[in-house]
Image (cartoon, rainbow, N blue to C red):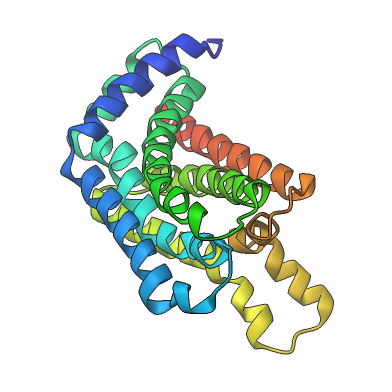
Length: 245
C-alpha cells in the first residue's frame, strides 16, 4: 500500500499553482473579491458614517463573497481533469489519493490566501483613523483563513464529483450558499432551541461569528479543522471509488 509522502503532494501543488497563476479566472476572482468587499464596506455599510473603529462589518461579509469566489478557484481543479481525461493519467502515476487531494488543496488554498493577503492594505490604511484593536483584527483574519480552508476543501470535493467546470461551479456555489446561509433559518423563524443548534452546527458562517467578534474559540477552531479534514477525506474516497470502478 502506497504511503502519503509530502514532497509528492508539494510537487503536484507547485504544478497546480502555476496553472492558477496563468489563468484569467484567478485574477478575475481576486479583483471581484477586493472590489466587492470594499464597496460593501464603504458604500452599502457607510463605514465612515458609523464612526466606529471596528472592521467587523468588513469581515462579516467575507462568507457571502466566498460563495462566488471559492467556486471560481476550485471548479477547474478536478472537473477539468475529468473533462480532458488527464485524471486517468494522474491515477496511474505514483501518487496516493492523499497525495493528489492534499496537493490540489494546497494549491487552491494558497491562491485563496494570496487573495486574502491582498486585503491587508485596507485595514492598514484605516489604522490611523481610530484606535483599532490589533488582537481583534488578528482573530478576524485567523478566522477567515480557517473558514476559507473549510470552504475550499468543500469546493474541491464538489469539483471531484462534477464532470465539467460549469457543473463544479454551480454545485460548489449551491453547497457553499447552504453552509454559509443555513443559520439564517434559525434567525428568521421561531424554532426550538435544539433545532436551531442542530441547524447552526452545519453553518460555516455561524462558527465564524466568534472570530468576527475577536474571540479565539478553540471549539470553533476544531470545527473548521475537522470539517476541512472530513471534506478532504471524502475527496480521497471519491477518487478511490473511481480508480477501482
